[in-house]
Image 1 (tube, one colour):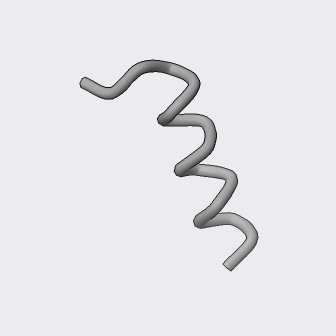
Image 2: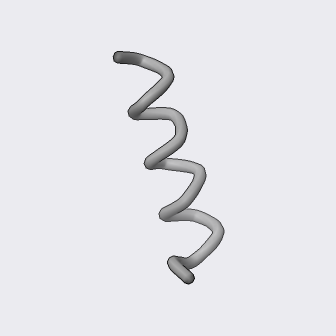
Length: 17
């Protein structure tokens, strides 16, 4: 899996959109 930081960034990006 991706690193925790990357996962959080991806989730945040999806939430913004």
